[in-house]
Image 1 (tube, rainbow, N blue to C red):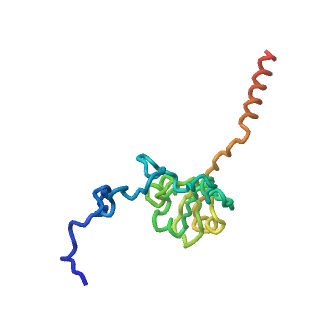
Image 2 (image 1 turned 90 degrees about the horizontal axis):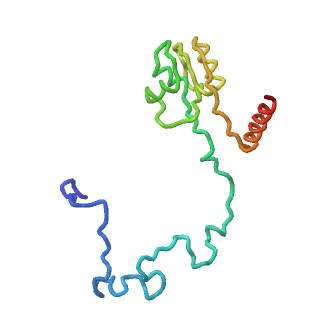
Image 3 (image 1 turned 30 degrees about the horizontal axis):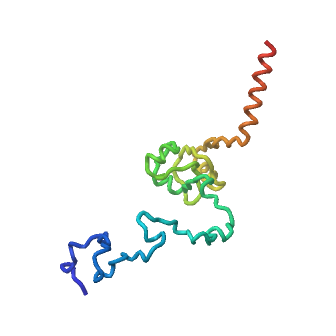
Length: 177
């Protein structure tokens, strides 16, 4: 078993650079482990790790499956009613800004949802994007109030169609004058 005094203080996290072309006795001499001729032996050569010599790569031969919603889904932060009781005092207003200030919410979010896990004993004015049914009941039973924040505006899919309508409306108003 090694003791703390035997630890090598000079140990480094990174490895030494590989020195090639230092003679045949080094094991990395002559062609410097590049082989004879061909693209890989030349200086400046680099190939994609999926390159298979012109053959259709395995990555492209296998079909894609399923759908990943990671890039499109809203990032929803869930906070339990029991946690609000521990953090806030009676009569406080709980809104997204206060939650960030008290470091209840640490990451970026699109929406905040209040869930009904735990018990609430203090009267709070809670402002969030969504509430579970049990959370609403528990907050109102404790004498608190609920305010729902508006949702994000939906993305307009047919932008060109709306632009045409605006132009037509502008033309029609000019012709009336």
